[in-house]
Image (cartoon, rainbow, N blue to C red; front, side, top):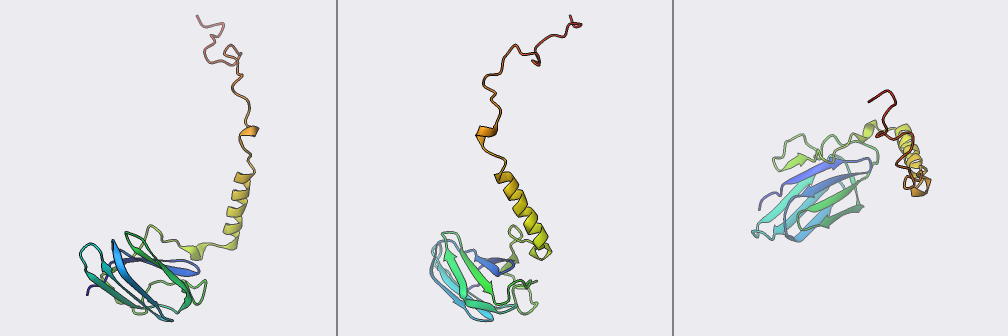
Length: 158
């Protein structure tokens, strides 16, 4: 058995772990309060993968779930204590060669304040209130010979 390559990222209420196994079958995910287990069989080469992680903090086993796709297995671990940052996935600081941070999805959510969120909401409302096509000026009836045409020659130019 080999550990499956995985990427993870932290959010306010949960932690995501994506196991990068294509065409997986016999997927088994085990959520415990402070431990997480994963195993599967690769459809590509029938390789058996197994990972076990002692988690940095506790999770809500009932609120955690996983989803399998043809390319990977994405696991959603709901934090037992929402709003607490996880600087790493594992309890110990040991570096696991099969685990890396998913920088494409990483976000420093700790810096987000309620003010920033309300600004975003105001921005969304503003964009929604800008109106649709009915508010646009009618450009179809524009005259080709209007005074502001760029093609018109100025009197002092010859």
